[in-house]
Every structure is written in C-alpha cells, then in structure tokens.
Length: 398
View 1 (tube, rainbow, N blue to C red):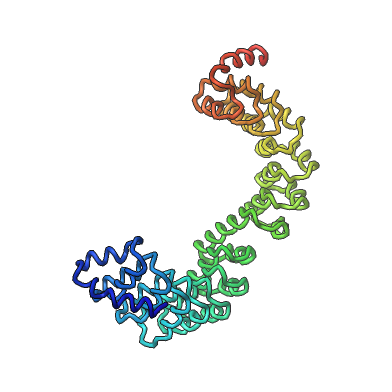
View 2 (tube, helix red, strand yellow):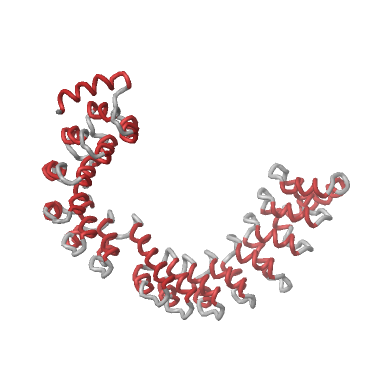
C-alpha cells in the first residue's frame, strides 16, 4: 500500500508543480475534501509548507502518514508525529532515530497512539520536557511512572502526580514530596484516594490544603462513591465532610443513624433531607430544635403526611419545602397556594402534584415569577379554563 501511494505521488508530481501557486496547493493540502490520491501527490511537493499541510490534514490516512515519517524536513516530521492518525508502529520507528530533534520527540511523547515501549524509551531522554510528556501520557507503564516519580526535575514529578493512572501507593509517596507543586498536583488528581487527600488537608501550604479540600468535596459528590468508603468517614473530624457523607445517596443507613445525632445542625439537616434515612431517625429529627433541620425534613419525600401537615404551618422556609415536596397532600398544596410569601407560592406553582384549580389561581398571581412557574406546570389548565378554575378555587379554598 505504501509503495502504491509513492507511485501515485511520483506520477502526479509533475502535474502538481507549476499548475498551482504554493498558496493554492497549501489550501488544497489542508482541505478535508481533498482525496487521498491527491494528498499523496501533495505529500511529495517541493514546498515544505505544502507537505506540512498534508500532515496536518485531519483526513490524511494512516498509510500516507506512515510514508511521511522519513520526510527530509523536521517540521514535516513534527506534524506527522502530532497527527492522531499516525499509527503507533510509525511513531516507534521515528523514535528510533538517534538524530531526531527534540520538537519531534515531544510530539511523539504527546501523541495518544504512542506505544508503551516507545514511551519507556523516551523516558530516558535527557530533555526534561520530553520526560514530562511521558509522565503525563495515559499509556505510560506503572514501572516508568515509578521511575519518573524520582526524577530530579520538579515538573516531571508533578506530571506523574497528575497522571490519572498513577497508583495509589505512588500518589501517597508524592504527597510527601518536598516540593509544593508536586503535592498540589496530587491534590488536584481526580484519582487520588480520600485518605491521601485527608493528609494533604493538613499540608503546610494553603494552596495544597485548599486543593485537597476541593477534591474531597468532588469525591464525596460523585454518585459512584461506594457505601463502605462513605461509612469510613462517618466520624470524620471535619463537619463539612460529615455533611457531604450524610447527603450522599449511597450513605448507608447505619451512618445516617449516627449522623442524625451529630452536634452540627448542618449535618443533621443533610440527614433529614436524605430519602434513605430510616423512619425512626426522621421521627427523631421531626423534634429537632433547629428550624433549618425541620425545613430539610419538609423537603424529604419520605416525610410522613402528619409531618408535612405540621411543617406546612411552620416557618416560611419550611412551608416552601413542603410546597416543593412531591409527597405533599394536594389539599395542603391548595392551602399553600394562598401563602403570603412568594417563595412558598412559587414552590407550589412548580409542584406536579398541585391541583388544577390551585394552579389556575397561581397562573393569575400578582408576581410574574409565580405566574410563569404555574404556566410551565404540565398540570395547569388551558387559557380558556383558567378563569373558571380560579373561580371554583376561590369559592372552595377559603
């Protein structure tokens, strides 16, 4: 196949040169509409800039790129090494060239098709920028990463610390690195285990501590976090961690039972809102002295009808949460449609369980936000019915 492309190129070369200006050939070489046969001709163009454009064309085939790895110009070879269609075996062949300039080696080290063996070879390069590219590459082997984790150059170790494939053991090792930038990279790595982030939360550098705290929150917000990992954090000294554990959909019942007695109301409020909280703990939290905890309970779809009926007479925030709750009795929602607070009426207007007459009333509310929410509710009657439904609602609800 490679030889055929070369023959086609040679036959067409005379046609190529002299028929078009270099600018026209560059435009054609870069166009996604240009055929592979024509690109093979342009790949032999006397103008280096034209050959570069062929190597940069997103449609250039892997077969043609494989023929271009021996181009006499380094800038062309750099473009070939950067192309995501260049096959791994071609990149490996290029990397064997002892005279290869750094810019081409950098492109090979960054190419997603570069093979593990090639990356291992490039990890030995004397140029730290090349080793850094290897350190961050997703195909770099663990053995190579372990070696680069001991590199004397800080950016190389930082790149290892940023690699999502770096092992937990290596991340723990790098979290103790004397250089702040390495520890910061560990803190920002989405693969860093929670225990390691906890250590970095006590780092001497505030930037590292802030990054670790942010990553912990992201880790706890991940819906895929396992129940056993959450359980291990039930008694974490940081109340914000306990709050995030309590609000997680995978938080085990045993942890929720403990967190329902937490000294911080923010944690108890998270337990009160979690639909997985056991009924006994919901009953316990119904008697909590803090209004914010009761408001979160009012938003819990597992709250009992009696709880919601009582909370519908509570603070404005509690009434708003009752108005949002899809488990709230329609009769209670109808009463809340008359509430003096806009936030409560807005919540009722958005609730899919709100009765049609109440929605008709809210569609004529004095507040534009409430009217808009009611009109967007799928249960709201048509325009023709609104006046009639509102009249019925006024006669029966007061």
